[in-house]
Length: 161
Figure (cartoon, helix red, strand yellow):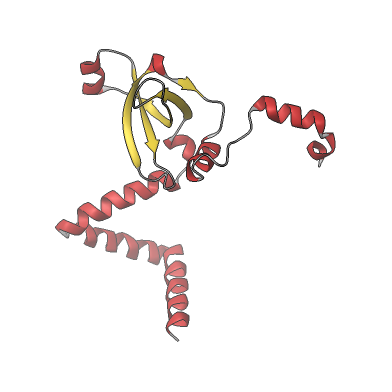
């Protein structure tokens, strides 16, 4: 009975949220949550985090990059988030970019690192392929464009299908 009630409650809330009255109710609940001091910080941070990762990934992460970190000779893959401005730019005195370095196997956690533009190598793989590689711990490695082209030459029937 409790499983059925939970499913009905979730369905009811989803239906309610889909109409005007439901949206107004959700906005009212958000305002109420923002009035509670401890909950406000947790809720707003969680909401912003989820919006970043559930939205269009091309807005959050523009390119996949490779750079030497934590020391020379070790390479780290990261996701370019944008050009670094403000105090970080002023204090570093060089052109820097913000790079998000996700952790394996949970790419929603990671750290932000500021990298000089001239020390980056842009990769051709898509952000989605980078996430697959990160989640799998490097087991799933996307093929290069040259490998895809060679595969297409060797197997023309797969390309047309």
